[in-house]
Image 1: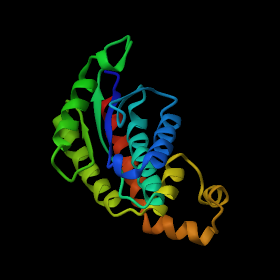
Image 2: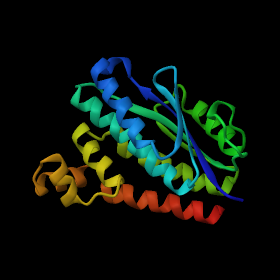
Image 3: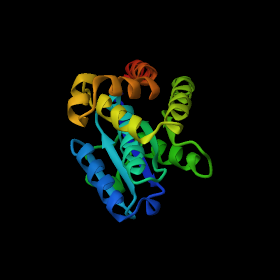
Image 4: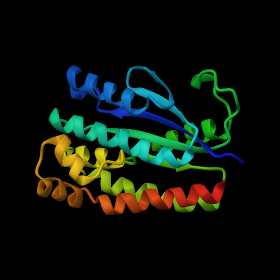
Length: 206
């Protein structure tokens, strides 16, 4: 089975961000998702179809980091509530609203489980053994992102894109020591390991 991914998400506290910050976030998300099929609806909700399931978690985390970073600059607490459904997708996918397959169903169900909780990330497959590992990964990442500051998130966002600390320092016009402090406080080493664990589980599902 070819494992693909569907992300379902919505912006937390989008109205509290103010129009300018919300516009910046939406633009950032659109640029981030440009390589994938995506649709926004109701203004602050969206769905994304990612053919390579291994990329789904990094993309989801970049969405969250963008929201935390931009919200932080606007002086508000913002985030993205997001679920990842992993499985088969029925081809062709003409529109995400009519998409079919396990990945769409699992993403929707996982997103529903986030409602009314403090959790902001859920990952689900049809494989229950895999789900046990993915649940631990999601919970661990949730704890990290819950206390992440806007400045830390801005650095983590760039690292998730594959930038080096040196490149991030140049891009953000900060000293290497300042970037390193944000990397350490933002717990990048742990995030990197958790993303790799996620990819290892995906490889077992292929």
